[in-house]
Amino acid sequence: MSYFTEETSADVVNNRIGPHTSPRLRRIMTSLVGHLHAFIRDVELTEAEWEQAIEFLTQTGQTCSGSRQEFILLSDTLGASMLVDAINHRAPNGATETTVFGPFHVDGAPERAMGSNISLDGKGEICLYTGRVLDLHGKPLENAVVDVWSDNEDGFYDVQQPDLQPAFNNRGRFRTGPDGTYAFRGIKPVSYPIPDDGPVGRMLAALGRHPWRPAHMHFMVTAAGHCRLITHIFVAGDRYLASDAVFGVKESLIVDYLKVDSDTEAWRANYDFTLCRQAD
Image 1 (cartoon, helix red, strand yellow):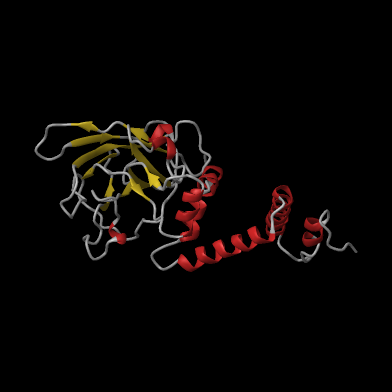
Image 2 (cartoon, rainbow, N blue to C red):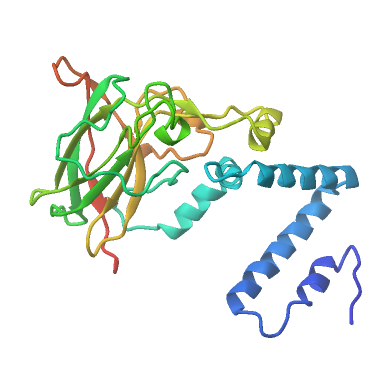
C-alpha cells in the first residue's frame, strides 16, 4: 500500500482504478492523471491559482446553454479541437484537408437547385461558388451532397440572430450530377470574432490574443462509400489567416476569390474537393 505524497501522487490515484474498468478508459484516465499531476508539479500551482482555475471552469459551464457551448469554444481556442481533428482524419495524399466543424452547423438545411442563391437577407457581396467533388483517382462523384453555411455580411450566423435573419440564411445543400460539379451563390464571407463576452474571451484577453476568425465558407461533403469531409475554404488575403483564434487555417484551404463584373455576382471562388474511400 502506498499513501499520497507529492512524489507518488499520480501513481496513487491511478492505482485506485478498479480492475473491471475498460482498457480504453483506463488508458485515457491514467494518462490524464499523470499529465495533470506533472503539470501541477511543473508550475508549482498555488492554492489561489487552483481556486481561480476552478472558478474559471465553473463559469465556463454556467455560460453554456442550448445555443452556446463555451467548453467547445475553450477547446477550439486552446487548439485541442484541431488536434483531435488532425488525429482522427489522417488521410492519403491528395485528399482535401479537414478543419474544425464549428458550432454553427444546422441539420435539415434545405436541398436547393444547383446554382441557387443561399443568401436570403439581401446583405453582402454575392459570390458564385463552383467546383467538383472527386475521388482520389480524379473520378467525379455523382450524387455527392455538398452542405454549405456561412456568416452574413455583419459577421453573424442565422442562429445567432433568429429575430433578425431568415431561417436557413446562408445555408443550403446541393447534390452533384454525373460530372461531380457543384455550383451555388452565397456571399463573400467576412471575418468575425468568436463570442468573447464570457470566460473564454476573458482568457484570450489575458493572454494578449484576439478572438477573430478569418473569412471562410463552411463545407460538409458526403458521398456513398467515402469518408465525410468537413472543411472550410478561406478568403486569400484575410488579415487573420495567420492568427485564426481557433487555429483552423490550412494553406491548402486558402482560395483566391476573384472579382468579376457580372449582373449576378461580384466574386467567384472555385475549389475541387477530393474524398477518400472509407476503406482507404
